[in-house]
Length: 369
Image (cartoon, rainbow, N blue to C red; front, side, top):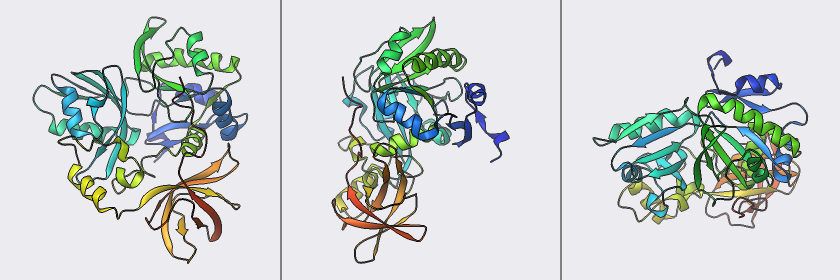
């Protein structure tokens, strides 16, 4: 797609002014990295101090009306009855064969109001699916270009928000609707990096001033403005799936290790029959971690080979881990492959040795109080 046809976030001019390297993310022209260190420096800033990301390309949608929460619960996999108003929940939108149309976050604002954040490229599809089956009185709105999203991630994220007078310290996966400088903003204890952090959801036109103030507060604490390249290495170190790689219409929650986000006891959700059958059969490939023990960086679609020379799977996401300083990957592997096994990865015709492990590849910080 031509860059001229790509959508721009409300912070686009700020990224280009900083000289960011830009690329297509789900139809949006977004920053990959900034001058002055690039992906590794930005990744390290988040692990050790703090960083901010523009993730305004993520979708935004709203389901409202009498019984809105119950309707969403009957469609998406996770069980909204597990949480209370003021909490957010990771969930999946599946097709009838159990494949993942999208993974998203649902904000439970009330029994009649659920705010959704899908992935950029899938927002229209998720909205259309919800609209198609919505009962009378339920409204499903695509609000993609009405809100920005700014992620503040890292050990010092609380300090950054507190310097702006924003609320901190609420429970993981909970949110507060507040204001900054008289402007409305949602502050949620969520993120995609494995570090303590927050995601801020301001109105579209308010995202710029908020970003500018956050950038100053982050710089004062030795942190960095970060691009989506670092976001990808950070999420891979945590073993977080990326839709289109580790989740897809052909990769189910059972296969991807996301069965924990399925409300198996709910009476209904999209794809329940197929997923229940697949879960019981125990024959599908499963997502595992691969920790490279040799030299090389695995990439998506690289074949995984066992000690007998047989193909036993495929890499879905692979990268160099700036924290561990070695290659890491997520891969869909046959069930015959066990944790601790040694395997080989075919990286462009070169054999790279690896150990099968359970992610994350780094220490988990995200839930710390």
